[in-house]
Amino acid sequence: MVLFPTSVARIAKLEGIELVVVPKWALAMSFGEGNERRQDYYYQDYAVPERWDEMRQVIEHFCELLEARRVPFFTTHDLASHIAGIKAGPWALVATMARRLRESMAAAFDDRRDLPFQALVLPFMASYLVDGLSQPIHGETERILTVLEVVLEAISAPAFSGDDDRLLCRFPASYHQVLRHMRDAPDFRGPEFREGLRTRVADVVTEMRQNLLAS
Figure 1: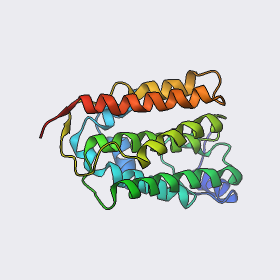
Figure 2: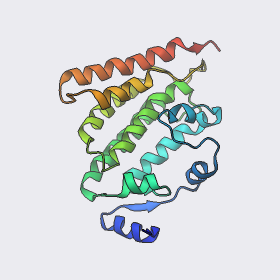
Figure 3: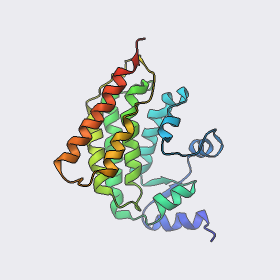
């Protein structure tokens, strides 16, 4: 089977979605070192200090694209997970949550560009969840949305000031427990699910506080 990008773009356009290429992201994905997207890819993304400085800009750019109904398209993952089955109707929710994430970051951190690593971990998690909402194949919109709401609550009450210059010496191991709870909890509509999420998000914050080095 041969799929021509222009043909895929025309099909997406019928649903009011524009497919775009973000050159910097495409180059990093294609030619960067260690690009195997393992389950623990967030450890890789935060392993390079230079990425800390640009992470806020990357998240905001991603949100702005989704708000404008624009979808990055340069890998088979984008085709299989984001574009296959794409529909205009559900995209209003995706755009709304992308806007809320961007606005939550703006309210929490003002115009600070040089945010400390620890301040970016929960926004990074939220962007991962927004990315999940933009994948029509999973069928887990309600579950993901509940988790995203809890994470946005935490971002709106930031645990770390943008002026905090202490160094986080390691990525929080408890991060994946939030995502595991999202995937594995059998009843995601009950109050226990949401309270369990709040507890696990609080654990991420606590672990980061315990691993901050004095400046």
